[in-house]
Amino acid sequence: MKELCYGSVCSGIEAASIAWEPLGMRPAWFAEIEPFPSAVLALRWPHVANLGDMTKLAKKVLAGEIESPDVLVGGTPCFTAGHMVLCKNGYKPIEDVCPGDYVVSHLGRLQQVKRVGSKIANTGLLNAVGQPLGIRTTNDHPFLAVRWKAQNTRKNGTYFKRELLSEPEWRAACDMPGYQWCALTNFNIASPDICSRFLSEEQAMYLAGAYVGDGYIRRWRGKSKKAVVFGINCQKLRKFHCRIPENIFSVASEIRGSIKVTLNDTCYANWLNEHFGELSHAKRIPAWVMSHPLRHVFLQGYLDTDGTPSGKAGFRINSVSPALAWGVAGLSQTCGYVSSVSFIEVEPKKVIEDRVVNQRNYYQVTICPQKLSRKSRLAHGMLLRTVKEFKSVGLDTVYNIEVEGDHSYILNGAVVHNCQAFSIAGLRGGLDDERGALTLKYVELANAIDDKRSESFLKPTVIVWENVPGVLSSADNAFGCFLAGLAGEDAPFEPGDRPESGKSNAFWRWDGKTGCHAPKWPQCGCIYGPQRKVAWRILDAQYFGVAQRRRRVF
Image (spheres, rainbow, N blue to C red):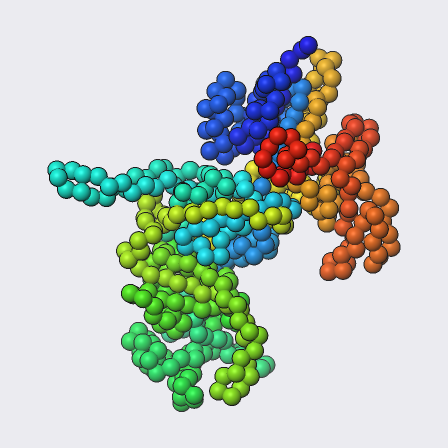
């Protein structure tokens, strides 16, 4: 019997090879870009080429540069909604990031987002020092990690503690416990010019921090005139006067402990609104502040208006804006502090001075000087803290973005890598969507392999694909797009006839929120197309000798 060979894309640490090699199957090549899995592949299969980026393989197959295997195998990773990504204009929920946005990479610079994607997948919660909320992600999403160990040693009769640090590397989330997660402390982002009639650059940066903490913009109906107003107390006003000449402001009388301080500067008000937003729940800190020479002045302005002293030289800050909370946390770490962000839930209403007022849940940022922190360390130009555990928490919708160039971004303060693949969620625009997704590249690669094999009168390659069961109910019918691509059809397959609007049936579920039907593909089935026959079913690892409940579509 002829020996079967296979090519593996998005290879990871090659579970396929562990299963198939005892059956006499031979790996022709791998395609994996992440450093840690690549190192595992090089160690375990040094004789097998790792070709890296799978998007370039189709051309190599057609050119005869690499083998056209008998079997093509691949699978695919990400973060749940609500996790915050550091973008050019400040932190933004990952589900709101769009192609064309700019995010901050692991090198502290802006890089453009090429693609976005989502899917339903098994997730876990990464718990770490400095991450009270935890990070919910797929098991294999790569984090930038450093191995750290404190070792007691003796030299010349004196005992001292020695720190051992590895070089930064990308590691899967499930492998992070015991490692240090990394937060940037150095950024390289150009700052805009400051627009103001009265203020120096230092004064403008201080007041920008104060505006984010406790300011708003006043407007006059029918006029373009604007003013910046700060609601502060006597103690804070004295701090203002230490930095800003008194003749620049107008100060109103104190009412219930609050003093309104007004700066009539339309140009500056417009600049504040453009860069820092407006209203307490929508304020943010743009990425350029992280690298501004006067960022410590901005931070001081914020702390003077909205910071509460806590512990030894530390502060506690409350904000209803998640973008602002994560922005302050990140900024403080460029100024010698260590920070963490918690979420506080409150009752919707509260009585204050005999008045019933509405209140929102809020985020609490705790910062303390890094030199006083026993659970953090600075190395490689980053702040390092320990990951405690990664535990499985079940299925959820996860999101990922692909970033050009550096292929990385900052999420909840942690440096993470974008995934090599987006699963079939990248097919949102159908198979003609030029944004593409690696799943489309997977289909293109399969077609290229078949074309090359036909030149030698060989049978078409066998395709093995794996994903989470949630893909069968993806709202955009991405599974139908993928089936159509494999089968050689021009239009997506559908699981059955659609019912009328507002109704569901065995094949379609009506989603009242979106006003659309979502498909309900069966757990097993087959499709016959002009190019291929495609069959799928759900298998559970626990019934195949693995001590794990792991359901997957194959």
